[in-house]
Length: 420
Ligand SMILES: *[C@@H]1O[C@H](CO)[C@@H](O)[C@H](O)[C@H]1NC(C)=O
Ligand SMILES: *[C@@H]1O[C@H](CO)[C@@H](O)[C@H](O)[C@H]1NC(C)=O
Ligand SMILES: *[C@@H]1O[C@H](CO)[C@@H](O)[C@H](O)[C@H]1NC(C)=O
Ligand SMILES: *[C@@H]1O[C@H](CO)[C@@H](O)[C@H](O)[C@H]1NC(C)=O
Ligand SMILES: *[C@@H]1O[C@H](CO)[C@@H](O)[C@H](O)[C@H]1NC(C)=O
Image (cartoon, rainbow, N blue to C red; front, side, top):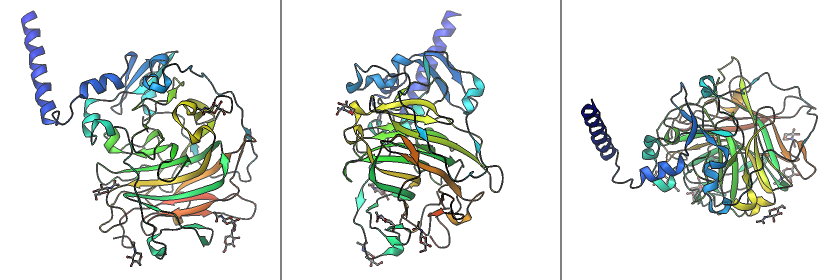
């Protein structure tokens, strides 16, 4: 019996060694070390029907505390602020709030732990390198072509055009506000499951809060994404993201690096959300917000009906964002090496339909609110729309009638007859 077990063990070792070789282990020295560092010991493990493994990790042993700047961080268990919710003009579109994640059907995490999506060997092996794992590709700005509005190099402020630089390998369709200091932003983001054409491309619907210089900005982000490169499938997943150097070498999605401090025992970053909306059928949305706690300068991420998930300790991780954000964006982004060129990628944004399709057809962002130092949530004083590639993905801030607030629609199919 013992002999048989030893034989089995050897066989498993040999097989895993061979499969490591086949998977390019040689290129990926240190995979085991990295996995050990990223995946903290679980108090309980939950196998989700969507294929994810969720580890319930002791809240004091989560990845955040590996960050050199957070060695002596004292965890803040809940936000110390309350927002003044402004009465909004419109009743709103008919849509159901998504409050649950697929893995929650298979169990829950005990008190004192936080649910963390386990990073598997195969996830690491898909990355370009161990150091880039969990990171968006660098953002490289190319020269802005001031003379060619056809290429969509301008965001339009209602009808006047404002020049912005264009970013390599990324295409966005956004609602933008700037000109003030923002200490929070929120939105109801319609949930869809758009097509992603290639395994190394991704699509998002999200909020960005940014500060700092254009070539080295800080950004806090949340939304949903379809990102097979990172997650290994094409499900629609909840994500959080941070960077302090415009995606160069800091920050990451979710808890795939140290930085974000999670406090919530029920919501797992990076895990799928469902259901998704269907064309002219039931619409679903997630409500997401990022708010700075004026007492601690921690930026809290909230989900659903004001449920805190955790925070980024800006005093330790950020410089500009330790004070406020100066640019807020809502909308979609496609990452592909085949945007702004022919043939264009077929990776879709939003629902995969153009913004002009409106409710039930195009992806919407409703109540895109900001928070200023008065601690009130409000519709921004000024907004502009922007589409990089507007024959491929569009942006439309649609106001139904006088006295109603606009609803932002965005997205598109990518490649189509007007975007070959
Ligand atoms: C700017 O647009 C014009 C007109 O389409 C084009 O001829 C020119 O090559 C573009 N310049 C750059 C730097 O992309
Ligand atoms: C956008 O347009 C509004 C109204 O015309 C104006 O007050 C505001 O300054 C403009 N913003 C920018 C950034 O051009
Ligand atoms: C935007 O422009 C349209 C037409 O040019 C005008 O009717 C509308 O009042 C403008 N809206 C705002 C918010 O300035
Ligand atoms: C960050 O902001 C807080 C609150 O304003 C302040 O107390 C703290 O000193 C700042 N931290 C850094 C590193 O600047
Ligand atoms: C953009 O994509 C091309 C491949 O088409 C790649 O060679 C290049 O490095 C990418 N640039 C950036 C800045 O990601």
